Amino acid sequence: MSGETVRQLAARMAEHAHTHGLESMELVLHGGEPLLAGRQFVRFLIETVRREATGVEVRPVLQTNAVLLDRAWLHLCDELGIRVGISLDGDSAAHDRHRHGPGGRGSYAAVARALEPLTKPAFRHLFGGLLCTVDLRNDPLVTYESLRAFDPPAIDFLLPHGHWSAPPPGHDPNGAPYAAWLNQIFDLWYQASVQETAVRLFTEIIQLVLGGASSSEEIGLSPVVSVTVETDGEIEQSDLLKSVFDGAPATGLHVARDSFDAALLLPEIVARQIGAAALCETCAACPERRVCGAGLYVHRYRPGAGFANPSIYCADLLALISHIRRVVQADVTELIQGCAPA
Image (tube, rainbow, N blue to C red; front, side, top):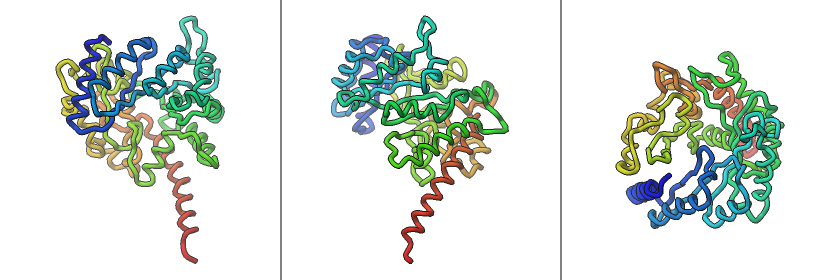
């Protein structure tokens, strides 16, 4: 990203925060691999945004594969208050199946080395958590325990991106293999006497089952609260939409000429702000519509029908939500009965 684009981005963030009286904004650096931008650029970016957005707390987050994450980077993150999320897909066999260096060698060993300082007191406060993409070929409990061994404050399990014209690996229209995989982890996690590691997908579903709201695009009906700014300054929807078709996230907006409020007026973003009103007939009639929310937007795409469809993970989401609901409701019922007067 050029220096001029950085300054335009900073101005747009400040404009949006001041227009809406926001006390804080989150600035997520991701890619590709954001560490390739270098420490000098990351310092310039964050300091420029903070200088422009006076009176607003700018909370930077960096999502990295951790291959380049060394102590020099960690000292910079500490100085600038950057929370660090690490992409890790399980143990060495699971992780190295997909994540290779230029020579074809798996990156697990490098990631494990980079994680070690984040587990120690000096840098522990920077550790945002681990992001793991689900692979049905991996043992779920081995995957969970290998992630938990790094004592992360949170784990995000992400369903691999797929939709109705390009289903995810192992998709079964008559079954729910991803729910079966995740349910095993949920049972182990939920039964732990002290849940020191939050599993965001599970905590979000529990929050929704108990009548709360979600803070994730992955589940529930909460409005989308972010935009992506590309390196050329284009303002786009979630970059996850790139997995659907070329140009899917495009809005035609640019930080040089358009405010972030302009994005809020676009039909494709309005559809992600109005909750249940944007659901297709199938989802609107579903008893779990408030909890499921049709799942992640990108997983709903069907050629000819756009995004007004159930998620390709519909059966999996229903099975996962139903399992969590049964467990939580049983505990709530027991608690209520235990508090009832004799």
